Amino acid sequence: MHDFWDLLASRHPVMTAYVFVLGACIGSFANACAYRIPREIGLSDERSFCPLCGARIQWFHNIPIFSWFWLRGRCASCGGRISALYPVIELMGGVLFALLYVRHGLPIAAAYWVLTGMLLVGMRTDIEWQIIPDRVTLGGFATGVGFSAALPGMHGAVGAVAGIKEAVIGAIICGVALYMVAWLGTRMLKKDAMGLGDVKLMLCFGAFLGWQGGIFSAMAGSVIGAVVGIVFLWASGRKWGSFMAIPFGPPLMLGAWLWLLGGREAWNAYLSDAPELSFLLAP
Image (cartoon, rainbow, N blue to C red; front, side, top):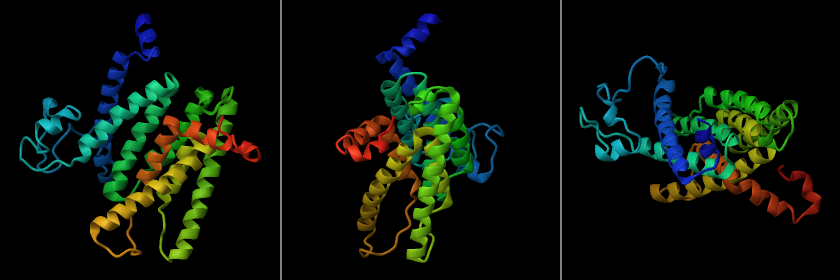
């Protein structure tokens, strides 16, 4: 057992492959959560079933990523089409788990795995339902504070109290900042510019990433969202300047993953050339 943990800590390619499989399985679980939570179906109420015909899914038809392609995106019982979001979320889980493992190592990568699993749930519900469950946002905030106490090194802090302080300050700054943006946008557009789910999501980001990471996620998410909006506007054939509601949660989440996979270093490198902005440097 001791040798296993040493191998896991070494970030050996074999262990990275195992982590990829783990992430894909978590992505599969995130798909189940994203389907059941908005419909208020308990996660333990019954085994996996086809959302079209209700037939139970056999274990060999429920292998992450592989089964969707094997079945050619159709239910084995009724032949109905299965959303391509299933393998996409599973693949994202595998890739992100592996990258975070290689980038950060254990135990900090484990905290980011938990965050990733929650965000995958929120990403799918926001795409399909335009909501991000409180279990993801507020639950993510509470989980982030807990991890910050256990792993203060996430924030470059020493000691549980310092870790909690960084998490809470980060959540407050990020939550207030995006709330002000949402308030101003609503006043300017005369309609809701952003859901409160996105604001609560920033509480989660602030707790896990610190306020610098949360602000970076919002900035990067805005750019990603703008690009996606332009592409969708062009693809839909609508006139330029027309209004199109696009979920902001997924771009924010992509911004958070960018921070974890190199954004922190890019942020620091950019600000290191401006001494007067040194207080913005991330630990």
